[in-house]
Image (cartoon, rainbow, N blue to C red; front, side):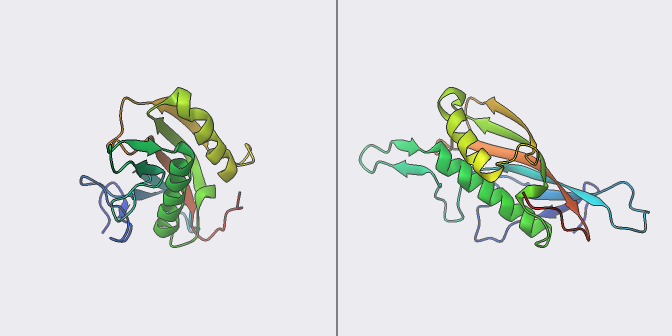
Length: 167
């Protein structure tokens, strides 16, 4: 169902769902829809974490005695980027992936402690800075769950009928 602000994309129910009323992403066509050749669509991807469909979190181990959480920013960042890639794949019907990301905002709960580890995973996905998306990284006081130390929201460009070059 398309609405005035584009077409929502929801991952299947076996994956983590939004904690409020919002889609995983929203696909918006270009303003030049009168053109005879298909143009780009913009995919706005909601803030994405390492939360799994079963309610667990990649990169988080909990001490059963103390209930204390140990967070691994590398594992969480890898899972977040994997989830974003799956959202792009699903919303584009398999025609695009992480190479389509044009802009990203990274939210960290401990920028001093986690920035380097997050960058290691980021650079593993985008080893060529010429093909990496624009990015902003900020520290936040908290994320929606204490089991999280990184969340990423981003925007991707989906080209219809054109297979973009892979990173």
